[in-house]
View 1 (cartoon, rainbow, N blue to C red):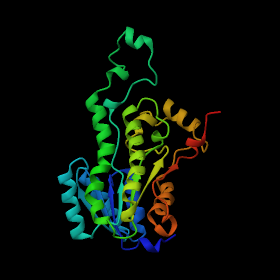
View 2 (cartoon, helix red, strand yellow; view 1 turned 135 degrees about the horizontal axis):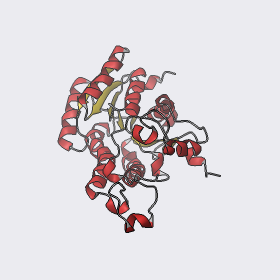
View 3 (cartoon, helix red, strand yellow; view 1 turned 180 degrees about the vertical axis):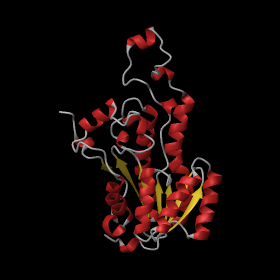
View 4 (cartoon, rainbow, N blue to C red; view 1 turned 90 degrees about the horizontal axis):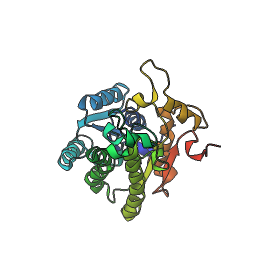
Length: 282
C-alpha cells in the first residue's frame, strides 16, 4: 500500500544501521521519503543507504553520535543541505550493555554467602554501565529531538516516532538498566506529545515485542544455533509462539507517520508483540 502523503518528506532515522531501524529506513524510502540513515557505525549506515538507493529510493548515510549535541548538529546541517528539513524523526538509537545486566534472574542467598566471580548480582551492577545504557536510550532520543524538532515546529504534519519496548510495560529479568531506560522513553513520549501538540508535532512510539537481532543474539541462541532457555521462556509467554519479523513493524510505523490515518493520535505507544503484553501466563 502506498501512502501518498509521505512522498517527498524528509525522514531522519537514528540507529539506522541496525536491523530494525534499517528496516524502518527502507520502509519509509519505499513510500517516497528522502531518508537520512544515521548511525555511530558509518559503514552500517552506508550499507543501508546504498541498499535503499539500489532499490530506487533516495537516501544518504550520516555518521554521528546521538549522545553528542555537536555531532547531531553537524548531522542536521548535512541533512538540510542534501535533503531538506526534517519532517519525520524516528528515534531508534538504543541498546543494552553487559555492565547493566545480572547473571541470574533472581537473587539467591548463596550469591551473598559464597561469592562467585562468574555471577553478577544486583549488588555488582556497575553504575557507569547503568548510566551508559540509560543515556544511550533516553538521552539518545532527547538530544536528536532537540536538534531536529526545531525544524519541525509549525511545519505541518510533522511527527516523531520513538522506539520503546515491551520492557517498558513489564521489566524483563536480568536487564534492569535497559528495562528502566525503555520505560523512561515511553514516559518521555507522552511528555513530548503534550509539549509539542500546540506546534503541530505528533509524538508516538512503537513498542516491539521479541525480535531476533544482532544485539540480542547471544541471549536467544546458543553457539550451535539451538534456542537458549530464555528463548523458550519468551516463546512460552508469547501467544503467537514465535519471534516477530522486522516487516511486521511496518504497519505501525506507517500508521503513525501518515496523518491521514493518525492525525488525531499523539502520546501513544503501540505494542507489536504477538500478544506478549496481553498474556498473564495462565
